Image (cartoon, rainbow, N blue to C red; front, side):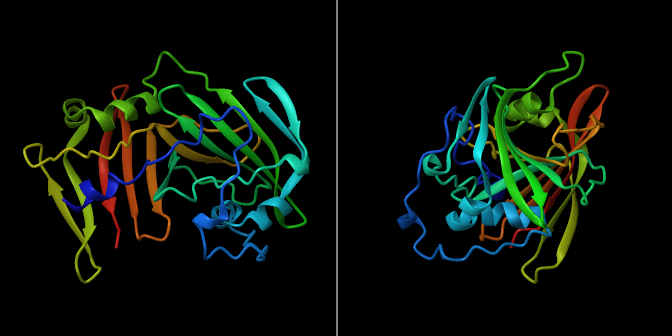
Length: 260
């Protein structure tokens, strides 16, 4: 199936195993990068965060120095002359986001862009505040996420789901509806049975996911729904996986692959 090949591209590099400010990247990797362009679409945060990673001039202009940097409760600050360009997910083929299927407060003036390691449950969080209609990075925090032992942790579940074919098949709610697009770019729906299922080997060599919170408290209501979305960096990748907690366990209930 096409989605098997698609999802295998999702996670190709690590961003969380850095306890210090990110190392500088050579602009030679991106010869077409227009470093003089510093405008951004601040009305849509998802567009801004992409430009923030792509454009070092924009990034430098949107960091509030000295920047508070908290690594597992060790607090420091970064001065402007010590800042190293952070490419975020620029070098990934795609980036993956998670939400709980609830409407977000798009009018909020706060955002936290978070990388979460599904094995260590350590996250790196970038705190952005909108001031004069422009997003600015005001803090970076690396924290160990708390775990509710009474519930199956979604990130730990996803780690097993993506790497263990037997476990994965046990955690798909069959028959499952799948949507792809045909050669005419029209959506095509079909239903997949347990006998037809093929392992989604999309889980990379590393274990990271991205989330966006809409306030500095990182409020996230624990619903029984998780939607995992993948968006490619200029390569046409676009997919959505819907998970539902049933009887205290997570199951894949829907797969939508709109990749071109």
